[in-house]
Amino acid sequence: MPKRTQRSSINFKQLRCFHTVGTTGSFTQAGKALRVGQPSITVHVKALEEYFNVELFSRHGHHVELTTLGKTLLNITKRIFTLETEAIELLTAASGFQIGHLSIGAISPHQITSSVMDFGKKYPDVDLSVSLGNSQEIIERVLNFRDDVGIVPQIEKDPRFLSIAYSRNQVVLLVPKNHEWAKKKTVKLKELGGRRLVLREQGSATRRVFEDALFDSNITIRRVMSIGSREAVHEAVANGLGIGIALENESRPDNRVAILKVSDVDLFLQPHVICLQERSQAPLIKAFLDLIREENTE
Image (cartoon, rainbow, N blue to C red; front, side, top):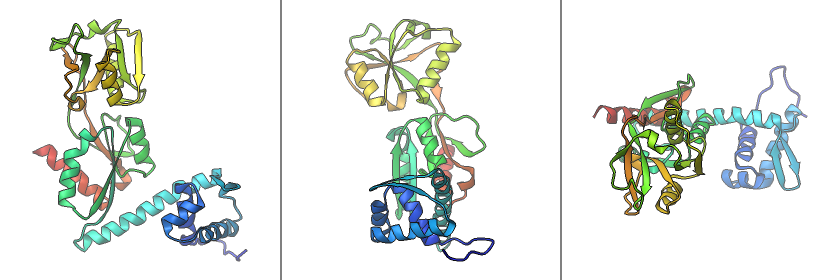
């Protein structure tokens, strides 16, 4: 084992190898990601472990798992290599040539289509990726540095995030075309009492807003079907399985389904674009946030 001074130094090549194994889940995949042979990855990770006399991975044949210490270190390396990327972006932007990669999380493609298109036109050399999920998943992805920015239907005040109001989106009801309400434009919230509802899974902001309104009005819904995607909710309604809840701008035209509003309660979501406060000045994140601010003033 190399002799260490009182304050140990760290080999960043070894650290990058550890980080890549931790994020990809295997030494083989890490080798492919870093374009080196798997034995080289193994040597570097082993050297890191031996230098500090620690175990970062539990090895079970070809299967590896992060130890508790390894998981803690991975959280640190995520920040380290994210900052490295931001430093590259900053220096590149200073030279007048904006390149890099921006990852965006959203609950649906409808939320981001125009913004992503506008950003892509303004920065054609920036690679864009989009991940879809519910509100909780997107928040977790931003917190874990897996997404640079997220677009969520609602967010509580949280000092960890910078958030910008994006747009206002009405919550509507979906009924099958043969339903007794199909020709109506509106219904009152209390009329939903005792009806079978088709809702998104727990964690969906649309569901939370709707259930909060029911609770505030002392209305009990006894029959609920929970479904994991907005498309599945739409299909369930079309096939007569219940009354669905959806966002107005995500409700696609379908001659099997009628859309109506709740007349006595203002049901809406106020989507926000979020990023970590500590990353809000990263060049590409800041550029995207500036674009959102510009769109809000138009």
